[in-house]
Image (cartoon, rainbow, N blue to C red; front, side, top):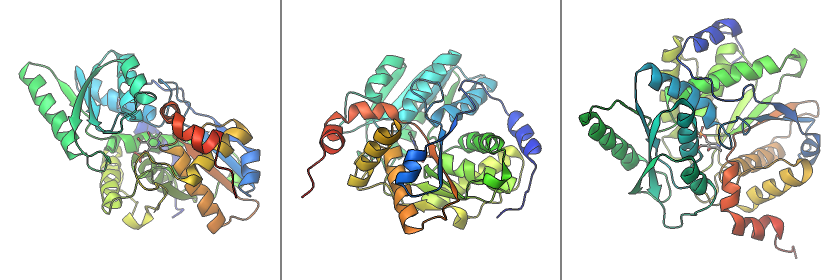
Length: 352
Ligand SMILES: Cc1ncc(COP(=O)(O)O)c(C=O)c1O
């Protein structure tokens, strides 16, 4: 769809009217990486540097925190309960680090995994502080039901003590989608030359990031194709759940939701399981680092980048097309994958 449903100014005004704590370094850069473009055989590749958002080691979740914590503070909450992932959760580190900036106490629920790593985000999480509640749950991190229940139980315990908890059960939340509507407004403002609008935007996301970009792009009538690359095997109800949250975000913004379920395009890039790389994702890490000094992480962005390369091979764009990859961060996990990086990137197997 390329009909403008709402003007740039009107959408910006709607987003700006919501409670928000300005915490991230925005706008993030939009960087041309010609050596990677040449390697991918495309005319132009721009990388939106949402890995450099200025909270802890940065990443997509910084944008979410601005709206979530703004909401928590507007509601008079005095403790922030969040998390849900495993020990390598970027989200958990961002939740604590951002809450530290506004002086809000945090309680993070994390799922214990048998193969938990102690470096990377696990280490950063201890550095940024906050209280952690470990639960035994789904080691593949596909099911977050018990994490959500634990957060609610903790909230009830605190309320009985007279506290005012704010619970963020999952980053798949209407305000997270709003945060990426805001990122779409930002990106649109950075693309000043209408002749050079990108034709495709790729992002490692099956959730709020993709949802916000879709909603923002459709509201503004931006004609590019948005492709989400998953970071774990996609569940059958992923698109339905995302569609529901996009509708909730549209309600928050006071607009009708133009996004149809069939507009949600998610390509399989997640490999065998959460956190498990595949040959193409290790190649992505090596190529990006060695051609442009761009760091991708093994859990999310390397998988997404590899998925983009596969799609570009399968559906090559014409030579004058401009492609954007949104870098969502996750860099801390690099340090938790030393053994795999040594095996697959630093000294990859000698080809026969
Ligand atoms: C670095 C990074 N990239 C991408 C994602 C995926 O985002 P979404 O929740 O939109 O699927 C996450 C989510 O945790 C992340 O930490």
